Image (cartoon, rainbow, N blue to C red; front, side, top):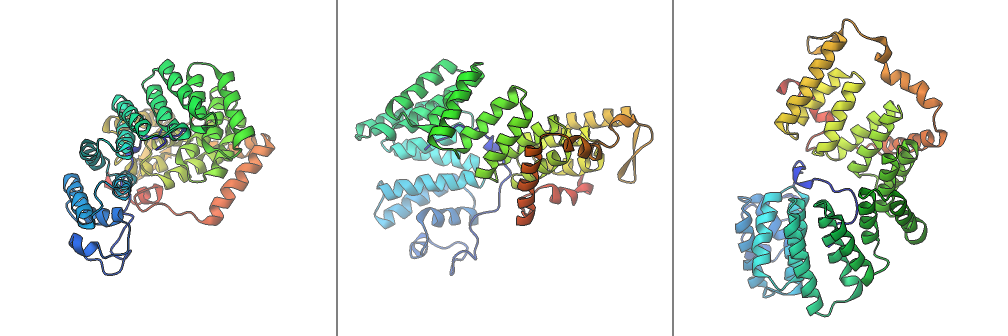
Length: 414
């Protein structure tokens, strides 16, 4: 298990995706099938159990009981395969935004399988998602001791130390984080995740030169396409005000992982800072297509729409955002919009906005952007055209769980 060194996503707040399984996925499946019947189906054990879960009451305790029943029927309870099924089932729950259910499921599993490092590590991962960093550290330390007792050495231990370091980092215990990450590198000097996490800690301690050197070492000497290293190097450039360089680096990170919504958000923010507003808008929209539940992305996009005075689209996107952002956050954004419109002399007319008096300096931000970006970094502009051109050719569609396209149809929902 490894959290890697990317800026952490707040996965607990993701909108629930559609189930990865459907009744048409496997022939012969019907709602309410008995476990004895499911045993005969040619599908992984965790998929069988997850199917039962989504078709039933979505009760985590019942799901866990069914796990043990199925393991007993198969005669493999406590085996490596059974433990792997427990871990995969937990991951499937979080992948589909059943976070509360995954938390209870892992509490039951980690309590029963106290000698299984795999189960303890998965419980630690879920604890991390809930910002329960102290428990995450405890579980990783327990898993570490279990691995040592089972004769694991070297690279098999670096992941635990790395995750302990990342949890300390999230708690603001930077010195403890560095100690844990140094332990990870002592057992595996090429542990890229530990190096990336260490660079993150160094950056937050103001040691930008050390952090930059460590990330560049990964990119130039170990793996030139390591997404975490590239992304975090871009983050450092952004904090140093090197926005065009940061944008180029974010595009490199997206070349490795094109569908990373956090990187698209960061790209949009730096493009906004250097007045590449057309491209910034596209980046925000592409990010929301990929993850309509990304709170930070939605919040920043709504602020961006106010900045470019796109009040109609703000209203449409806000309809979706009401299902994702906190009520207080929505109220603050609405208040900000109202105050901004009042200052500009904007009134609502039949569901649209009409500007009755306005400072001409910002009247056509997007159209003005074309001339400003034309004189900018030619390499950056070329890369942006290439990247978004490829996405357009691929015809990436909005996710069915929500997005701007869906939000536009919700304008009247209030």
